[in-house]
Length: 278
Image (spheres, rainbow, N blue to C red):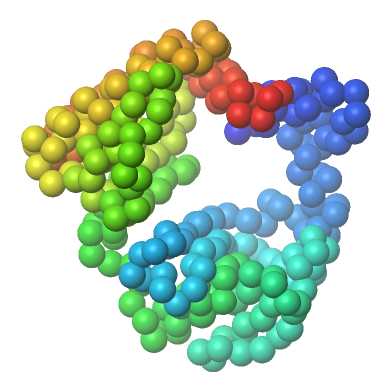
């Protein structure tokens, strides 16, 4: 992350109109000074949400960030308000709840235990406080099982595949059309980003309905990656895509890309540059 951040800031610094931080330490110092809080106090964060149109998101927008940090509620509120948010203190499920203090502000803040907070939409904030108070069960079932099966890593995620939201027509990638229906058998996707010694890598796992479905999804992914590699004009990114391994194991498809930390950083930086025109 240090190397990636520094590389990105180097690209920003090449713009004569840019006057911000030029390395990670300067960035952290700037954020800490502006927010009036020591970022080193944070330990764990988990983003969560429910895709629009899902049965569980019919109550309204549902997304947020749960985090644990050695900060007082006043410090968290002051830091967020210094960034433009406004809150009104209240209570929910016997815990402190800070309601959005202005119209059209989507984020609320809840104190979900000692040194634990949730910054989320209203419904997601209240659900998290209900879980913290023992009034609601946390995520369970296939989603929980899929997440538990992921190896430990600094970053990991699990997502339910919104199969009822897949587009009807083909997706154009590098001049080739990919049929989105080929992914309709995927139930969940998990992923990790890891760093071991001098190697960094990303692993994505697609859970499907059976071995035949897994083979079909694997072939579709190979087509997507090949088309994207052919389309990009960045040789580093193209080589990394072509080196990506895609294998099946019964009903799962495992996609993995790994290499030296320097190479992984250069690939991510190149992709970032392509996306934002740096």
